[in-house]
Amino acid sequence: MPLIAALIAAASPVDGVRAADIELLNVSYDPTRELYKEVNRAFAAKWRA
Image (cartoon, rainbow, N blue to C red; front, side, top):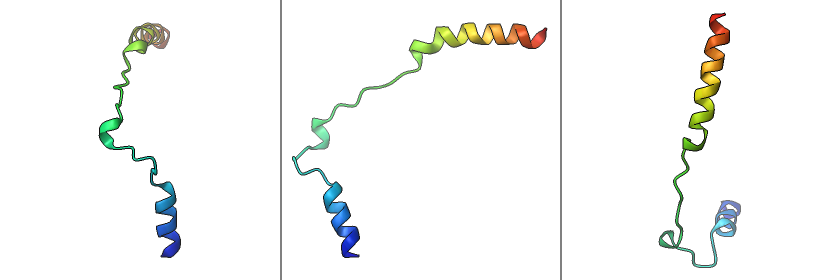
């Protein structure tokens, strides 16, 4: 049990970073939307052939 407590303490941030200090960015699939639209069309054409 002391080993687990030591690992948790070692993994904890020591610089005082709070959740309010961190800004998460929303990652979206939008940059690949056009690519996959083209890939899907090409795949469907080959699949039907």
